[in-house]
Image (cartoon, rainbow, N blue to C red):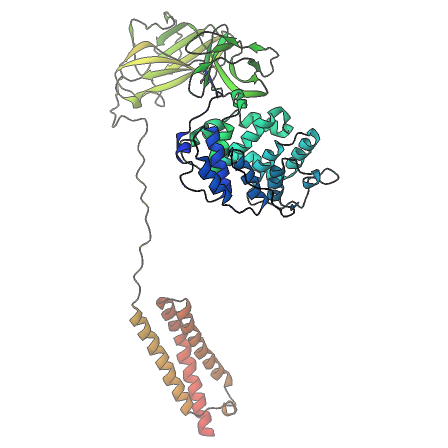
Length: 584
């Protein structure tokens, strides 16, 4: 079924909007002007004297202030406000300045605001903080440009600004800003889609009319959004152009017989069935025009008749735009006959003296054991691409159910399947009365499930099932994390370092008592003394690394290794120094 939605030209209530009108003095001219516009669109009563008093209390300093004062005064019959103030010069590089000055004067801006002499986009236009908002303002401004050359030039310049183009496409695609979305959609519908830039026309056909943007905006009226959101939504829903927006929704699939009837129902936003005009359908790679046939029915508005099956793209041609969808039409397969036989060996040939027609169940129960083979032939009237399988269903244990595929014989134009009851990969040896089910499935056909036979199995060696499940539960995964190693107490480490440092200080004290000097070093065996000094320096380096990155075990290990050469070399070095002192 196709469901299409379009909006009636009625005044929408929007009760939440009405409740929030002029509860207190608006804190800006913009909010005051927008609330007056909303009140006018919703036909809400307004104390014009009070609002006029508020309007005169604002100070006008910019073109934006003057524009909103002018907009507000349009809704106040006897309120005269002087908005013709001396305005600052237009900043040609600032679009905000261009936008409000143009709206205030009711004129299109000069072309040099947008494009250069050569027709390219003006490169030095300031980047706005919000490209979405800028895009909406650009198209809103384009609605007041009656000159076709000016209008076309503005749009061409817009599409040369990647920032603004990205803003347009992003808003229409997926944007949470209802205010900007409503402003853009208002401008597009006011301009008429056929007058928009060709790139934007293609985009609109795939976004505005395909997606439920209108529904999104309508849902926003149930909450109290920003004043800008309320203003643009109420303006949008007053447009007669909304009547042209239609949203088709197709059902999952249709069933084909001779011709497929695709029903369509058009409803308005209230869910009431309506009857549109000028609707045609086209299928890709098909030159036929499938006309829409209206009918009198409570369930749908009309239908298209097509003769194509499978999944295919269809185009709905409506006034000013084209909708593209994919429709799935499934064929019904009629089974002529199923023939089958059970033989007692792999080499035995079946006689196929058992058969049933479509939907029947064979009245007798056949017998089988581990040596048996079930041969099945399936004949269908339509030879289309499809998958055919035979399923053996145990009456109690689902895990004992098995399935084998039937192969298509092109010469005989039949499907042939064999179930080997002795195959351990497919058969669980359990004695029971099984049901044999025929399965036909394919993306382009209506699936068929048909229980046509019962088989009583008698296995000599029967299996005992531990559980009834298709899959064994895997063992629980247990993650083993490294346990935190106990740390050496800080006081012990400090004591260890203190003892070592104290020993070195004591050793240095002994060396100082020797009153050594470089010129007093022995003439012989000086190298042993230098090695001894290098080992001492190495010990201090190890202690320094201990405080930086080494742990206690690593430090003790290194000190233990160094202690061996230190004792040996130190002994010889001290003896050499002692002899040198006696000689002197």
